[in-house]
Amino acid sequence: MSELLVDFITSLDGYASGERWPGFWGLEGPEYLAWLGEQPEVTYLMGANTYRLMSGFAAGEVPSGQDEFRPEEEASVDELTQASKVVFSSSLEEPLTWANSTLVRDDAVEAVRAMKSSGSGLLSTIGSLSLCRSLLRAGLVDRFRVVMFPVITGATGAERIYDGYPDVALEMIEHRTFRRPHPAGRVQAPCARAPAARRPCVTSPRRQPVWTAARPAAAASVAGPSHALLTARIPHAFQVFITGA
Image (cartoon, rainbow, N blue to C red):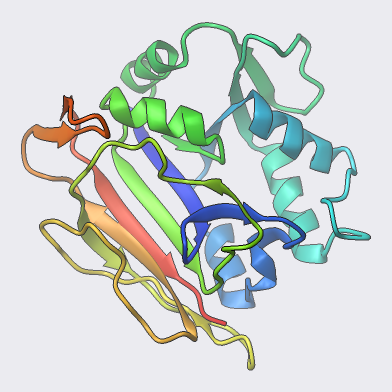
C-alpha cells in the first residue's frame, strides 16, 4: 500500500508564497538542497492551478518579480519535470504538455484512495492546497512534512495554507536543522515525540523548524471549523523542518 505525504514549505506565518518573493523565499542553502536531492522517488499529486504554474516554469516562464531563474530554481523545476506527476482537473485538456504528467478527471479523493490501495511507492502532494485539504478530510493522509522559512509575509503573503482545515492533533517524530552560509543562518528540522503538537516550537529568529509528527494511535475524532466532528481513519505523521535567516 502506498503512503501519502502532504509536503509544505511555508513562511513563519503560514503562507505558501509571497508576492515578489523568489522560490524558497531566497533562503535555501546547500545543505537543505542536498537533503532535497536525497529524498526517495515519489509520484507527485497536484491540482490544475499548481499544474499551470509549475508547467509554466518548466516552459521558461519566469516568476513575477524576477528577471530570470536562479540556478537552484532551475534545478528544482528540472527534477519535477523528470518525476511522475498526476494532475486532478476537470478544466485541463489532454494531452498535457508537461512531460510525465497524467490527467485524471475522476474525483480526486476516490482516485487517490485507489492509488494508495493498489500502489507500493510514495505519493506526495505539491502545492495544491485545496487538494491537500480534501485528502486530509477523507482520512487519506499518512504524514505531513513542513519546512518553515524564517520570514513573515504579513503584507505580501499569498495562499494561507491551513485556512479551512479541521483541528488535527499531530505527534512530532523528527526534526532537523539545516545550516546555511553566513549571514543566512540555518534551517532546523526537529526530531521528537509530542502527543499533541498543535503549534510550532519557538526557535531563535535565525532558525527555521522542520517537524515530523508520528501517527496518533487508533482513529481520532477531529473537530472541523464548523464544530462538526470528523473521523481521521488513518493516523497522521507530521514532520517539521525550520530554516533560519
